[in-house]
Image (cartoon, rainbow, N blue to C red; front, top):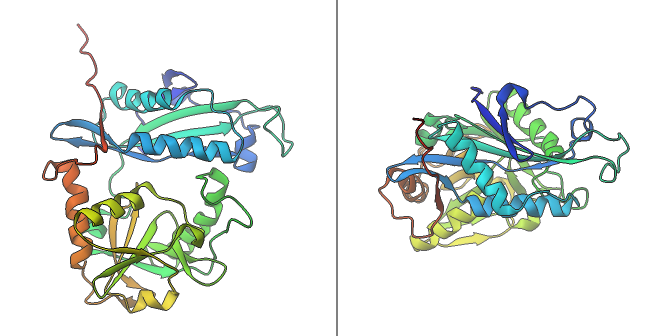
Length: 312
């Protein structure tokens, strides 16, 4: 992570190195935080944050589920995201809004005595699963760790503590020589990657697990649904058994960090011919075309960031 100059913290810009928290903050001990991940792209039309309003809505939904009262409006949070891009003079960047319980008590019920704090940082970050992965596909494995379910935690919330499960899935995959892990839910059906939603194509149709399969309702997942509709491709939400992955024609992952990344092998089994399939590449073409100017933004997903005023 390459530090930038400023982080937005509780309503004002502070120096990167000054954006610290106390070691007795509630979130540090219990994972009591919610967050978002967004990308800004340096498009021919200017710097643009992708689906900013939708990400902010999900951030507030996550906070509501955990009864956290964010002390700023959704529009103020959107403006904070624009401000960290503008003030740091970033182009292609990753944005991380974070809402967390600060210091006050170490009682599990920290909502009463801990201040809800808010920060937004941004920094340069390339392809999460690698540029080569986006172009040629990655190797993944089925994790031995099951995806947590709504019977235990509210999986629709994008909360810090939830990602301990994701860390187990991801680190196990890396330890065994794979780039990403795929989790299954308690019933043995495919859930998602450690930090991505998953899509499976067979016989010209695209399948993806429903929200009931203990998945996060991804913004990029929804993006793929809408792109697919524009391409007259059908996506079917249904439970996916693990073995369907092995005999699929195509498999790909989606997420803000991962964008749209094909999978070429799962558990050492080659998917089709081991190359990104035509449905995946069609969706990639439209998705990445939004940022290089080759595709019209018919959905109004790009939120353009004003250029910073030049100093005299």
